[in-house]
Length: 384
Ligand SMILES: Cc1ncc(COP(=O)(O)O)c(C=O)c1O
Image (tube, rainbow, N blue to C red):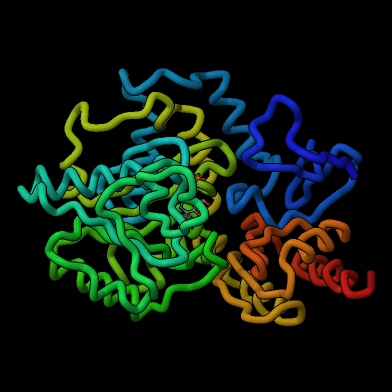
């Protein structure tokens, strides 16, 4: 194992020490600098939707690199137009703004919601933004302001004003009022421990948004693009968002973010309202188009649901409070960090969420056999 006591000398220490250095990936496997093979149930934190070194994705990226990587938004590029069309057809949300990460997508969604209320609806006082406890929306100051986790706020205050979260999920619908610009929700809270939000609560929030004119923003940064067995998780909750934010799995590992919005909401952005130099560049767009070519196939999504159901069943042998959908699962163990380290020793990569939750977000390309291999390797933890 490659031991690193603290971050290498010239790297910022925000990620702390890491004990493994990864140098290569193939399918659902990662290989470290010492040549050890790992079954990758992190997929770069729900990013590598097609696994590692996927031939079609690699080819699309290589071809695009030979054609045009970047030209900025001073000009149109055909890949951006095609991806926006594709996402509109899949989501029912007419317009897309592209950026480079989940935080950046949520940042843009906050701005879009406030500007919609102010400019389109003539309600500049309608600025309040609500989110759910346990929610995670990113680390930039705006996205952090709607991520109600005090530990993440330490040393960064003051945050954006008018952002609030109740003490418990059930209180949220009651907080949505005439001053609320938007409510941000995840259908399954990812960083919050892989905790599915009850469908009736999501529907109650959606109903309050309709009654008050608040926008319903569904953060699908982690759950989107097939992760939960449908293209978007909101499809399984019977709600119709005004805005959806995407990132992570959309381009299979090439940085990308997207904000999808209804036509009327998207109209709040006029030329000059918002922008991003790299956003929507041909390389990221071509990668996302290649990912969608595979993931948007109904047979592929059916396979995610089928293999995911098997994974959910298997996990009951190893932890409690097993929860999730598709290929996004969490379970409770006594000590998550110790479990993740023990799993890595057995050649399985997992992520710890807080003290006691362990997350499983493998490439969407895994098979039944990989899940059985996972089970065999996890069984060895008890014996080790
Ligand atoms: C639901 C959700 N929203 C936003 C983000 C932030 O994304 P990024 O790290 O790309 O800024 C994450 C990252 O984990 C996430 O899970």
